[in-house]
Image (tube, rainbow, N blue to C red; front, side):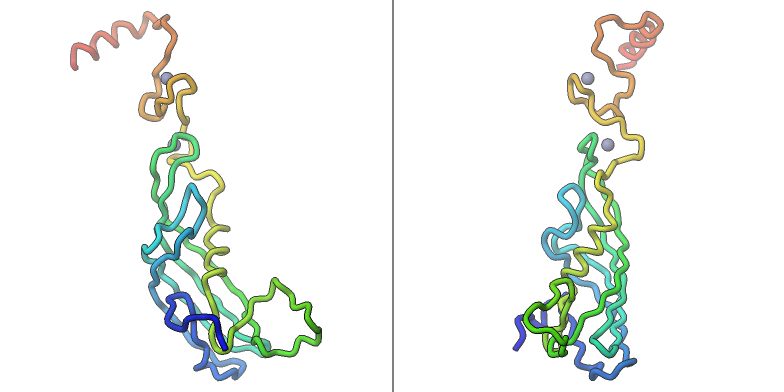
Length: 183
Ligand SMILES: [Zn+2]
Ligand SMILES: [Zn+2]
């Protein structure tokens, strides 16, 4: 009995490994990103391609998954809210234990342990964790983004010299006039 769909893009079948410790399989596939992969301000758009390179290796306790994921990111600058794009490369390694393995304990299975369901394993939670770890808490359009003007909300990177004081520096008045002439 398995609750996993063997045809789901992020579900892997380990049947070929035959539970022989040392047997390996390389898997390269491109899968559509699941919803909500990443964080609110920076995420992999749902359905966009995620390139996976994986090695599945049977060990005594289960199947060791070692791999990397690559995907494009969309989000917005935490300071100026400008849309930004980026890429993420996430590496991961995790042991999925056989689900019928005797753990010598009754009932209190460790929730931190990932398990196979029959021959199938679900890569999605692992992928989510690996991607989120790679993301900055505060994505920025540029490292020194000056953010928004606290008075009018203008994006300061577009208009670094803008000011609200009526007192215009006389040294700039001439330049401003020149610019107006050009317009
Ligand atoms: Zn910015
Ligand atoms: Zn302003």
